[in-house]
Amino acid sequence: MKEMSLLLGLTLLLTFLALGYTSGYTESCGYLIRKDGKTRALINGSITVDIEQRGPKGTRNTTYNVTCSSSSELNSTDCVSCTDKMITGTFYDVTLTNSNENLFANITYTFKADTKNQDWSLSNMTISIDEDEDENNQTVALEGWVDGYKYIMNNVSLDYQRSYQCKANMSFLMNCSVTTTDGNMSNMSSCSGESLYISFVNFQVQAFSFYNDPNATTFGNSYMCDADTTGSKIVPIAVGIALAVLVCIVLIAYLIGRFKSRRQSSYETLK
Image (cartoon, rainbow, N blue to C red; front, side):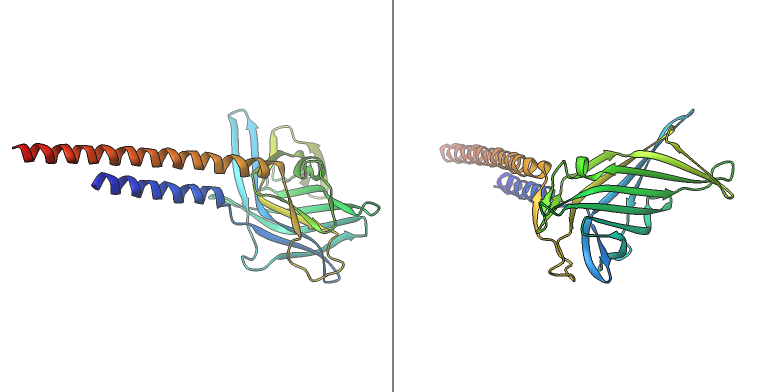
């Protein structure tokens, strides 16, 4: 019976771990783009930035997490440009953290709308990171950008009442440039010794949807990305199979235990 209790406890533990694995995601930050105090776009998600630096001594990879300026409120910014066809908003001095240092970045989202078809898409995302001064005391800024429609939204446009959501991890190699500033002189070049990657988890966006409710801070019905729809089928099946195997093991162990117990009882009776 002790073995039975132990196996049942193990089964319950693995069940809770499996449920936690399928439902747990990294804490997300919420962002709000406004014009004249009215909502024009919403963004939510966990963002990670990876900087790969290549040099004579090898390759160094550094990971930074984009942190929320407020855990309870949306990070808000005004439109850089807001029309019926385009929304651009920049979030300034966003903190990138890791265990060793903090960096600051400006993150810009650009949305486009097709007024004829009444649909929208994320056109572009740009991140500009202020790095430390180099060995020549020059200020170095690293900038990366990614085609939001082609890569983040996977060539999907949505009607004005829907949001785009992807809980799965999305990671992209960004187009990259480096700007070096020495005094009043600036020089921009493509990245040669560095690569910039950006990753999203539990990402959700929506734009051009709030004219009827300009104070809205919640998303409309979501369109799930392909990774979510595929993962939502595979993971429960895998968890179900694993639990079925565990149940079989528990039952077999129980029957073996019962058989040994009866055999031992019969042996003692004969004695």
